[in-house]
Length: 346
Ligand SMILES: [Ca+2]
Image (cartoon, rainbow, N blue to C red; front, side):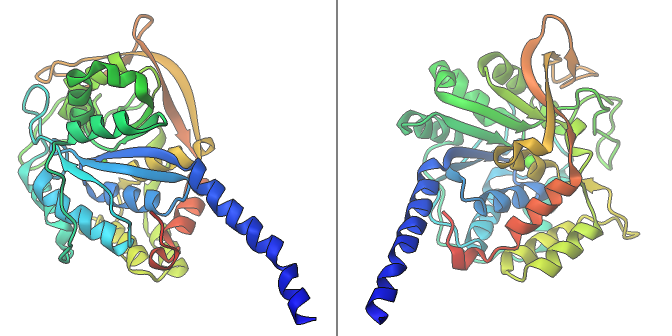
């Protein structure tokens, strides 16, 4: 009866094939725009682990934490440890749309230096077009409307929209880690940086004019602000869970990165900012959102530069107000713990 037995399994194989094919067909096209800070690295790995997302391009923004050129080498390391298929990558400007707001150089140096982790050689290369040009090209070529996940200042997307305003109609939605709406901002005095701005969030502060352009152009804009990300701290419990659940190069990298954020006394004081925004693409239910009308102080030299205010005549958009930490951690640990190089995503 061996031949019959063999045949009896055929429908199962066929169903599995259909399931895999259907999943590939349904995978949502996404462009990731990143300033390649440590939390961006984790957000990108999380997206790479998610079969429901098809990464069409990664554009690097040089106006946030990382500078664009060294950021590309760090990105290639991450794509390599995740055994990612080739993904188009392009560099953006290191200069914001207006003003000169910037992180202090020592923070940018640490970011570019990959937190002291060794970057291995990669055969990947950047495209010979700019980040805004690549955004434009991917959206124009795509049959489906594309989602853009912005994990840094809005410089690249704003420039793409200024160069081609018609692009806005071909974008499905923009999800961005940006802003502090009903919660204080996160600018603080640092060595080499003094501020009295206690309302802005870094990504918006660094290029407020770019944020204004995006707010005025994109109908479906969803902000994942500090209001939601403050519910998901990066801490030792999360590191322990990751270390227990996965032993791949990628999961070790994630655990080491979070551990690298500890203060000198061992405490953790950071959050899973960008991974929270990234997870919204896959599991939106873990973040409670609401709609509001917002205006922005887009003058980069203002004392409230980058401040987003709820007003009756502002731009209508959605923003996260609360995130479920437990739900985030369960999904994040499960995704990051997979063996990237065996399952061969993307
Ligand atoms: Ca970022």
